[in-house]
Figure: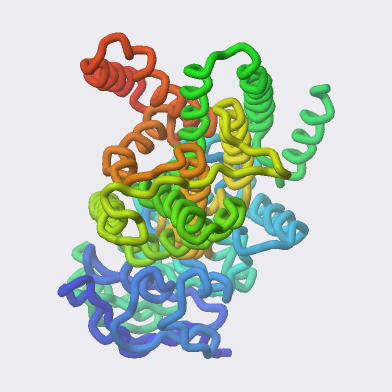
Length: 238
Length: 328
C-alpha cells in the first residue's frame, strides 16, 4: 500500500544568502494526495521548485521512484513523469489553448500518443475542447488553471506538483478544481498539492505538512490536522 | 489552388493536432509577397545602374545579418549588443585564410562556420544565466573584445586590417562585378529567409517561443532551456559568420573599424525597427536601415540626424516595429 514515490531528505535551498528551506524531510506514497500548507513565504513554492529542478538544492536529497534526482536537470525530471504546475498558472497568453497543450507534449515525439493524450485532456476538461482555438488570454482564471493542469497531463505524469491551484478563484471554482484533482488522483496520478487554503486542501488530502519559515512544523494525516484547527490557525493565520 | 490547403488545415484542426487556420492563411500570403519581391529582385540588375546595385547588395547583406540576429533577439528573446563580432569572425576567417594562406574562398566558409559556432558557444555558454541588462553588457563587451583583438593581432593585420582578399570564382567564373555580388547576396538573403522560416516553425522554433515567453513554464514542461538558448546563439552566429565571409570577398579588404559597436547597434536596429521575430518585418527593417541614409544623401552630414529622427518617429508610432509579429 504505502510504496514511496517521492522521498525528500534534509532538503536545503538558498536564494543567495536567504535560507529558504531548512532541512525538510517528507515522503509521498504512490496514489496519495499530500498537501503542503503554510503562509506566504513559508517555503512551499520553493519546495516544489527544488523538487522539480527549477531551483537547485544546496543540500539533502530528492528521490523519485527510488532514483536520486537532486542534481538532475528540470527537463530530464519531466521525462521521468514528475510534472510541476508552477504558481500563477504560467499559461502562454497570445497562444491558443491547443498551442499551450502542445507545449505540454513537448517531450513526446509519438504523434499518436500525443493525440491520445489530447483526447484524454479534453475528456477531463470539456471546456478546453470547445475553446481550443481561442487565445488563452481570454480564458477566465478557473479555465486558465484547468489549462495549466491539462497541459501537465499531456506528458502522462506519475506525480503532479500543483502550486496553489485555488489561488484567486471563486469558491465554486475552487471546488471544481479540487474535484478534478481528486479525479486525476483516482486515475492513478499521485499529487503533491501546495495550498494556502488549508480547509479545502485537507478535505481531499491523505496527509499534510505545515511549513513555517522553511521548516516543517506540523505533520500528520489530514483528518487529525483538520480536527486540530487551533494549530492550523496558529500557523496559517486563518 | 487554395482549397486543398484549407481542407487539410481544417482536418488538422478537427483532430486537434494542427495549428490554427489563421496561420496557414498568413503563411501563404507571406509566400506570395516573398515571391513577388524575389522576382523584382532578380530582374533588377537588368535595369539598374551600379549605384543602385551597390545599395541593393548592401540591403540583401543586411537582410541576412538582421535575420541572423533575429534568431537570437526575436526568436529566443535574448538581447545581443555584440552581433558584429560574429560577422567579424566570418570576415576575418575568410580574409586570413585567403590572403595569408592562399586557401580557396569556398573552403573558408566551413572554417568560418566552425569558428562562428565556437564564438557562439563562447558568448552563449557563460551568459545563459544572465537576464536582459546583464546580458546586454556582456554581449557588448564581447563585441568590443573581438574588435580589439582584431586590431592588435599581427595575423589580422592590426589597425589597418587585411587587404588583397581574393575574389571568389565558381566553375572558372570569377565573381568580381557588382552585379555578380548582387546575385550572391540575394541568394544568401533568400537562403537566410528560408532557414529562418523553417526554424521558426520547427520544434526548436516553438521551444524558443516558449522559453522567450516564460522560462520557468517552458522548463517545467520539459524544454532544455540551456540547450535551446545555446542553439539560438550558435545559429545566429553562423548566419553572421557566413555573411562575413562574403562581405570580405566583396570588399577585398577589411579593417577592425567595420565591426564596431555601432555596427552591432545598426543590425539590432534593423531587427527592432522592422518587427522582432517576424521575417517580413525584419526584411523591411533591413531595407529601412540601408535605404534611409541613401535617400537622405543630399542632406550631407545631417542625414544621420534625419535618419535618427525618422527612427524615433517610427518607434513612437509603431513601437512594435514597422511590420510586427501578430502576437507579442
